[in-house]
Length: 388
Image (cartoon, rainbow, N blue to C red; front, side, top):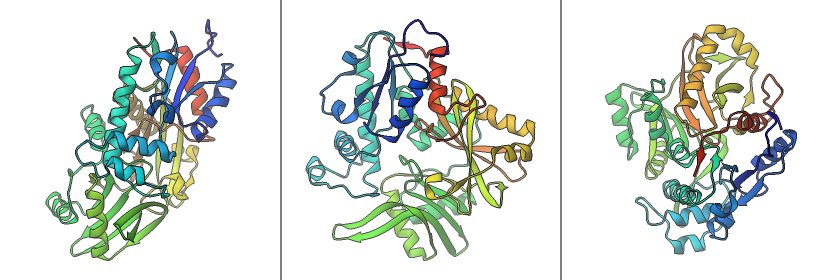
């Protein structure tokens, strides 16, 4: 492997077998000359059939991957959160639950279950031989909690959109907007990711309109919310209010809708991946809607054109901010940073940071490495602190 280690890297990955992320990680290990990672399935771990203290060897590296895209794992994590405040589903409810593609299902309960799982992982690792963890449990928990993550960044001097606090209803949201003199906001699930449960709301005077990734479906059991790749425009206030009320019941984070600069006839923002303190992977995300996530059928922009448009000093300033975001989470080997350049191309803000934000296929650094290869080589060159 790069760096000529004295022994092969023993990478242990807690993940869902067959996931897209593992599909990128395994060839990255091969490119670095290392053995295939040893995979611990979330399903197996959640059932208590394996303990990390028994799997991790001296010098092992543990990578905690996203547990998403597996219904049985999602159900097990929800079960861990059944006795937490704000829980909506009992164990009996979960036993009857069937897979329903795209449904937004008790995100607050899911987060509390996930936080409990992270605590179990940390306790389990305490019994293992000295090893390395790529992104630690405490950092992941903070990064998954939008207002907590924002507070963490702002306290370290990183500029983020103005927040107007939690709200419990549409009426409360409109009141906060009037008090704050903010006419456009983003409403996001506190514990959501990948544009899940997001609404861009414009309400100036008596009229309101909203853009959202959420589809509302009435069922025999009441209103159900689904994530969709289609961005809907809503202009009936009663419909907007119903949507916001439903999301607010699950806890939301509200922040000012910051105007983005334009490129190639679209608004844009960026995902920058910080690996070991270096920012060498970035993707420009172009959109004609308020949401820029690439899975919403948006497209990638020309990074070199953006650098030229911004100029060297402004571009380096943005990268320096992303590095500072990485430094704000010293327990993370890598972190994805979502940032927007403001009109004028001189200033920028950070929207979010993501513990699992390194999956940007096809984006290579100047050495021709994808994010996963760069992460592994970074580990070899400069291992993270060891955990007992």
